[in-house]
Length: 174
Image (cartoon, rainbow, N blue to C red; front, side):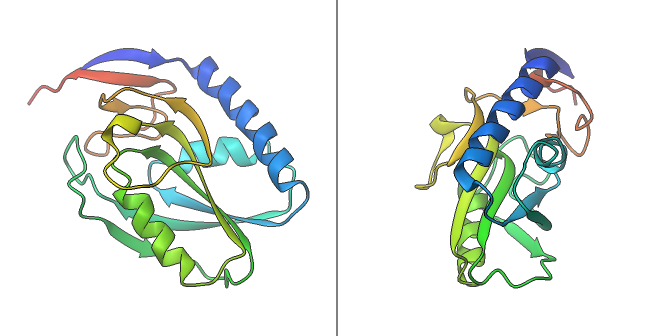
């Protein structure tokens, strides 16, 4: 695979610290339930929550719309393992990337059924030009162009999640 570095490890770390300031200011000392969207947001979530000051708990949802492709086909699979009631609570959904928006739209619709106090979205990467539904991040790290990216939790066929930087895939060798 031919990969071109787009965003360095240091740039990611700096942006995560700045996002944590924004989130700490927004929530003050209110309790928050973090919903990490697996698998891509795991690394981002782990690094971000270390900087958060408010009381929080962490839950996980597994969502996928890419499967083994380099694009989302709009068919979203969501598996929930949330044990606690979300009724009346502040929810912060953390995902790696908003692309078409289908995944987060479905996740939000599922979470609304529990009548939370609020639902906010935080994503590391915002790919606005690919958006096909009306959804946007309340907090995000980077606007990125319509490129297929890997690293820092994002994968191609379950590989490359461990890269400490974001790389643009220039060519996929079959």
